[in-house]
Amino acid sequence: MRELPREEPTALPGGMGIPLFSLENLSFWYPGSPRILHSLTLSLQQGFSYGLLGPNGSGKTTLLKLLAGILRSYEGSFRLMGKELSSLPPRQVARKVAFMPQEASFSLNIPVEYFLLLSRYPLLNPLKGFSKEDYHRVDEVLERIKISSLRTRRILELSGGEKRKILLASLLVTDADTLILDEPEASLDPPFQREIREILLSLKGEGKTLIFTSHDLELLVLLSDNLIALREGTLLACEPNRGEQNASLFRKLYSLPFTPYTSPDGRVHFSF
Image (tube, rainbow, N blue to C red):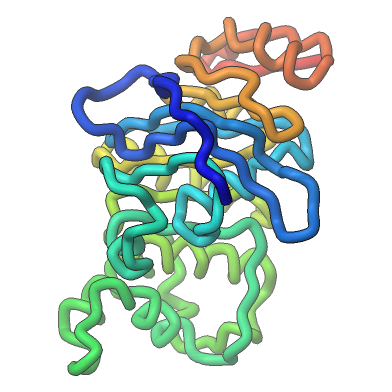
């Protein structure tokens, strides 16, 4: 693909120095299909949380897969810590960035523990077996997500919600500093939705960079330092999370009369 002329990236608040991600006039399409993303220019800093929102089909999942290094053919410039992504080995990217997909897709019916050990592949020495540290890290994550009871269960025998929990665990065992999540609350029952919110808030407090999509506006406002709005593959807005004042962005994005209100517990909600 031909590289387009570069422009100064639009920087979201947070951080100084080399951006974690820098996109300049980035476009993407699958072979034989129309463009999904159109000339995106923005900059994301380390240690902050970014909520990605937009109607279905706006390109959110595609953008997340690009940020995670899963899709590596694009037009324009896309830099990770100042280096063009296409020039970086996938294993090197995976040590920095971990991705949780929207849908659980497993092909091997292996025990959960073994799957999580394999999920640490960016850190594994290919000439050695799993170390005590690998087993210890898996134990920690299973306890953190409260799914130790699933350790010996086989992946394909789990429910959809249990598989989502395993995907979250596979994200955490990588120890990556940047976590990218595509609708992390999808297919989860209310108790675990609450648990995953607490886990994500905890990860944010630990200084992890979080980039996630959600159709839950309350989760976006609760967790995000900055909001990135896409519509039909174009960047509609990239701006700080302003609580109730986000209603104007939501109205523009979804063409619905959102009205904000704050509950006694301090949470911001939106009705329409």
